[in-house]
Length: 477
Image 1 (spheres, rainbow, N blue to C red):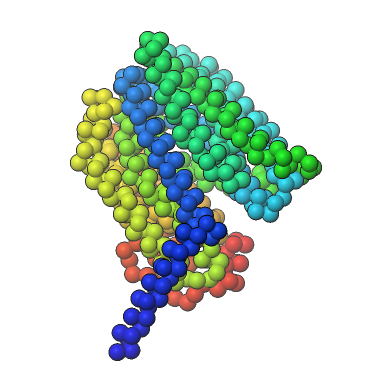
Image 2 (cartoon, rainbow, N blue to C red):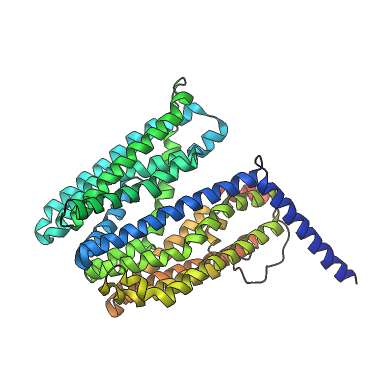
């Protein structure tokens, strides 16, 4: 009877807690309400942007044809690798420090950071673009005319894209969600699509990979002007009357650490897969792979929205030492991730061939690749997509970097073997194996260090509440 009474009491307590949470969600002045509304706003913008970008990619694939679309996708894959260096991960550095300086109302450091950002990003992206162009020109005899022209345009696109991404996340750090996300995720693909339509259907121009990149460049430049104007308007009055202060050593130290993690994550991304396929097989197959990876990424679209809401709460609950609520949050988030990804997975499994045919009849050959990538996305959600956030939000970011870096090395070892043996399917399998290995190791590490079960359908381990002293030590590490 006592046990039954405790169960009923726990149920009433859970219902009361849920009711309290829901009331906070509808209150305009609550943290929970602001978080939920912000997440919903970002999710809505991303839905619209993803739909527009998907339609533009379909249009581009149909107008370019499989061969030129493959060149376009492969050139963009190389471009994204160089972009990592060109922006020195300063976009994420901007998000971290400008968020802190805004909370502290430290206008002097905000002004100094923004001024130093323009110099650092300009120097890094300019040098990366110039060096890349010199390399492309030196090896022009070994490149096809189409790929050579696409590379040169991509070099010109580098500094513009680097500045745009940094300014977008700077606006996010200043808590301007719409100004941060809308130009990048909605306006840019919209302008790109309009440019392609005008070129093909109004001016009757023959589209090539290089001309598509030129339209991309024009759209990116226009959006950069819009984002720059938003950022200047946001900071002009607040910082014009203060003297700039600089913490360049600290900024660069954090930038280096973030760059290492971002580089490892990029190696594990499907964008890098396209480069591997294009280099080891050919650019046409890279185009097929790119279409399959774009569709597979839709599986985690809802997952990203859930993670956006959950990540800040992890830090809050960990700092408070409430292990029980932290476990509940991790479990609930993991189950939501599976719930929102499963319908997309089923749709792609049963209708994948039809959707791939929208790119062009020959793109259906990428269906086996799509199945492998989709299986990896679903299994990742079931293993616990929140694992990485649990590590980084609880002060174990250095350990997370080691694990992610190790899984990136595993991928590199696997992909050169499996791609030669099984083609593009082998590349996809390498990504999935490394991806799942990362999740498993993160899960084990979270259990050992925090006593938290990241697997959404597992039994939560028992243990004492997290104490503040351990929090301080882990953050210091």
